[in-house]
Image 1 (cartoon, rainbow, N blue to C red):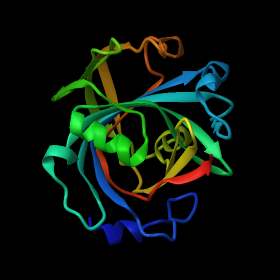
Image 2 (cartoon, rainbow, N blue to C red):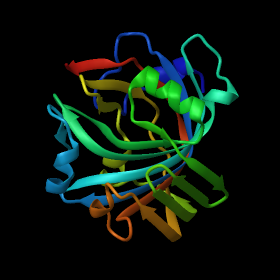
Image 3 (tube, rainbow, N blue to C red):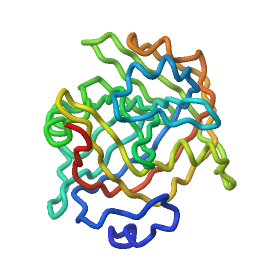
Length: 240
């Protein structure tokens, strides 16, 4: 779909798209979501002020989201395979600020060093390089420097025609927030509603030493999507 067509479809959004010109285009493809309920008191130590933990029916959540990043590029420039296409795994939770709900990244893994370096420079998001492998029904990550590992075998099932409120709450997020040593920043994003599928897993390994205490043995909810096209705006500093 053309970018202007995406920008013209906004009925599903909780607030209007920014008036400023968008800055980046990207595609998130073959997306596997693993969602976990967590104790909000355990999560608070990771969330910088003035952000607040967003709750669904008084419960906090974190998600591991693995996907193919494709064709990421600035406005008015083409994508380049060497930089624009890579595998990514993000470890995220859900936050709010001044009435806008979004995601906050605890960690982001990417499979290309050059993409990690450029993404960190442009966005200050917590990217780090990891060895990531993917083939049909499997997504695996290994970070040698931190000793972190992730591996899942999964099988997408039927399409979810009637999404629950929780399905929507976990996936339809149109802002991301991140902190640096000097500031807390917000990025607005836009995409069409996620097309989700039920998903089964038969093998899962998650070992993140910093976050293991947050995770149960098995996720509380799993989704899969073939993907979406995403338009993003530039960094907006909210504190600092």
